[in-house]
Image (cartoon, rainbow, N blue to C red; front, side):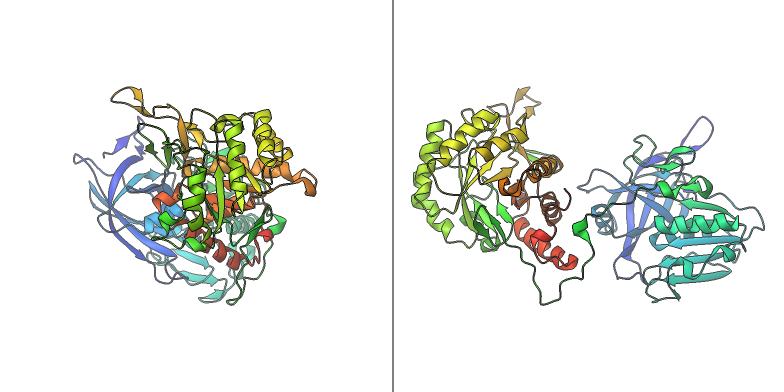
Length: 602
């Protein structure tokens, strides 16, 4: 790493690998463990100078062992130059999402990737100016860093928190005022309990960072008082360098980039009336949490079949249930879809069958299975012993094999058949049946005529007209639809220059496909909702679901239940964690049943 200057002599941000020198929870923050100190040491390579941050600037931070793509923008709280090529930088990290969770789990000696220092800085006040500094929550960090550059007792400092107080280590004001929403420290109330336009008139300039509602409030008070105000803004970022335009905010001077034109802006150009307010679904109105002795009802009925909860093991990823019985509570699942079954036994595809990709897996198993008759005589009895509902996944190559397989399953105690017309990694049959409305309707109609079992049809995301295929299978007699199966993909061996899989194409699954699968489930549920209620059939969502939050998204998109597949390979307890996470989420939100929030995003 080296210091880089532009032709005008400006010190430019650099990419560096720093070493964590400490990571500890901040005392005073409530709840305990919600805010952390992260201390990073940055040394130059080659003895060149390390650029020091200016007050108000930030770094893009990313753990080098991160599973996430993007760094997180975090304002500088404090720094100490040890030498020209050795710098310690300190951050306050608010525990908020996956990115910050990774950052607070760093330990001394861990590597951390940094881009920075980035952004502009707080304008230096004129000598003798009466200064007011305001920080809200973790927004205290950049203004506290700014305060540390000013002479002691040359400013008044206001800090507003929901509860407790923190981040004031480097603050030495003439007057310190703290407000807390709950009254745990200082004045009870928000910043307006300590400041109004009349008090603001006592100052020549105001510097403020905090949540957007607080910034809008401070801007209004300063405008009424006729006092100059500088506000530090934030927005979601990708690059941090001004290239992606993902962090732009609307101003009276047009769009401005938080990372490059900010984060510090003249409050006079900011227009908070143009800040998009999140629209809340009517189903998401605030309710009291369920009491300690109340448990939400996670049960769901699909085509007349009762499932204890909406989490179902996806076909091809869970065997027949017994394979995972030694490492998890199979009985705690809602259901288990068997491996894909064909009339005759299948040896599956030759050659390499699995290729891992970033956030995904390509498989070319080829529906290896012992055949339906063997399944009925050997695997089915043990499956039916589980409390989780058994779903037999039926596949075929020809119309006749689908029909004959359905006839055999119809004579069993299987509660439901999942008709697989979407497998992308077999040469004959498979996905071909689900790519066309007519073909899909034909196979479903033929199977419907030979079985009275509830029929859930598994569709392919590769169909050109997915909604058309879904409506065709519904008209042909499907009682439910499961969506999506795997996406067509391929892999090439760069040493041989040949495709890895003998069939060239194979099925791609895993977290990477989740947003696309969610969109498809959303679109289908939206289309279903346009039909008369008595003509609708339930949709079971799958594709990249790996945590309870993913499951909640699918249910909010209208899914009756969810199937979980590839996630189980990485975490055998994924499904039981999803069941618990769903239950905890519903308790916290006050939801007594899945219907309380199902489809709320539509």
